Length: 548
Image 1 (cartoon, rainbow, N blue to C red):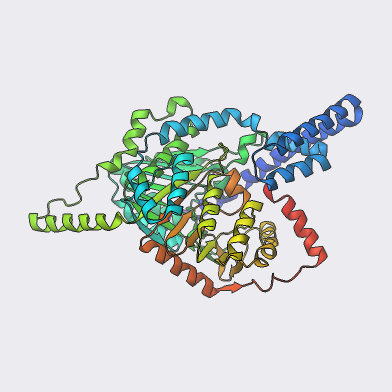
Image 2: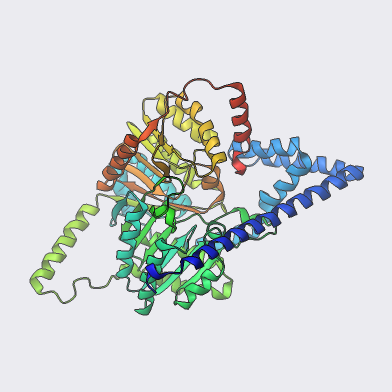
């Protein structure tokens, strides 16, 4: 079926049903929460022994939270809530942040991560070569490898996309060339015009014998699709699963969402960035003005890491009987080691010229370094935040940051402030038009504390800036899915790419210059003091920001 003939009535019904399901799920969840709080309150007021036990439990939880290796902002939120409102605080904490209750899921993820990531080969020579060029970046790459399990690569070409539209166009071209498999993992799919183009391209590849899989986050996609999306995909030969289905039951794992955005083709080409597969990300619709996003295309061995990440989440999503075997996973991850003969039946002279051009390009790529990485709430290593802080701490001349949400930990705020005080030009681009007004107000509450220490803030006036980018000193950058907020840094499954050298850095800086040109510099506006009423309101919002 051609995309232009897709039934728009069906789309509207699907979206409406998805929203209804979203509302019903959260109403059920809230009713369960309120019921548990009400029961606890009744017991605490009718039984003295229960009230005493609740206070003792609250004190023990506060002591336990205080001793945890977490950022102070996360700890203080729960401590204030438990001490100020024991019944509600204890109930919510036990439902949402009690590590014991997620122990089984943590063990499951740990086992699967070790099983998959162990199949990625490390290149110690690449680390040694990077260390000769820039020891501070090499140290950061070594940290990602040792504590995340993700290797550094030297043979990967990087292409930067400064919009979701360009990224989608490149994905369609790459998918059309797929020979073995296409894997897509996204926080949100919308069954609409943007996706229909992909659907046709994927169905065409299925007809050609290519294996195609789609994995989506259930909560992220609820507003856009219904559960029959899986049936629709499977009718077209596309394997499809949903991660962590939303449930009205107050189970702890529901708060952790798959926020990754990954497309992998034949283990040789990979895409990631801020955009989901939905119309607003491609500016087909404009609910928040112009949608600014960004992403990268990797061609080379670094795509293996994204193949492994997809397989990790795919195999976690279903029961053991439906998992890929070790041999299958190794086959997918190493598929890029044996690319198809791209020269075909060319005559010898032309084929030799193509080979020489390819080899010359490979020599140039040896000067560039690419390191995909991912962060998981199931371990106790804040890898994504540490990568960001590491980039800030090594910056000498400048560091430009783009994030749709700015809800910072004390550690991140201190790193930015110290860098600005020592003379680093730090500029942050945030949206000019918010998608969530409460979160937007929390974002703005951090401006004053940053600008008084020398950080500059720009609001993207054309609309909503959704890109997650860091670029520094014309040599190092990151691009991925990781927002500068507590969900991105502590609660969601995320991914990113650390980049060193290459013309991609220059293109990313040029994109920032373009954003600055159309953004409002609000630094001076937030350098002055705020009214007491505004400060109090922002203080309350920031106190509970880790729960947003």
